[in-house]
Length: 83
Image (cartoon, rainbow, N blue to C red; front, side, top):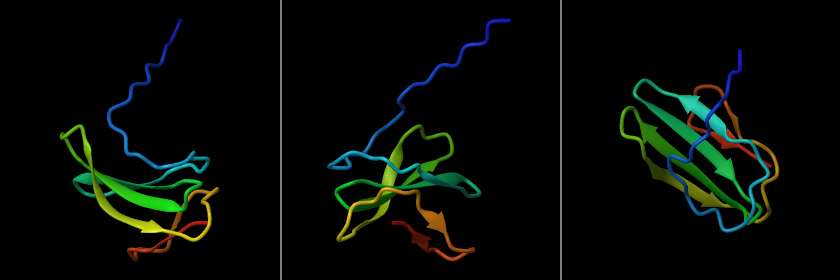
């Protein structure tokens, strides 16, 4: 059979420059955290709560260099490392 996928944009957040890195996605009990960085050095953590259909900015950081790789979660700590 012919199986087709549909991709739709549910929400977005301005990242100032291009994004080459894959997102870090963390499943929590009632929400999903998405951590992503851009060439501007901006790293953001967005939280989408279950059933809401939109995300809010949880935290952000500005690095002195551009981000080209996915962030990595460090254990169960609230720490993400990216480069």
